[in-house]
Image (tube, rainbow, N blue to C red; front, top):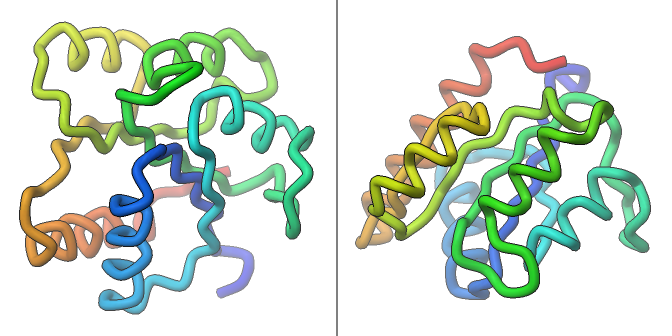
Length: 143
């Protein structure tokens, strides 16, 4: 099972949302390692192995959960940089955001996101979304 473990990078600047994701994972018994970046710049550094975090994020079997509204480098800017980077462009990204703007959805899909999910308002619904996402990525073959 260790070789099927997916390393998840949550790119999120809101501490409450980070806490909710951790709680939802615990409630669903999701044991995938979670790495946290507060903005797109931090996320790129983590993915490139340039960030000073322990443990470092492995270079294989990675998935990004991405908020769009962040300081320094927002989610769309991050996606553009990620997709231009030869070593990182194939990492699957699922947008998890409050933005219901059509322009954000179109731009995200044009940058090859694996999904675009609006953050549920209630914690109960958030737990259900995380359970569904877990089932989805467990079925996928992520290199």
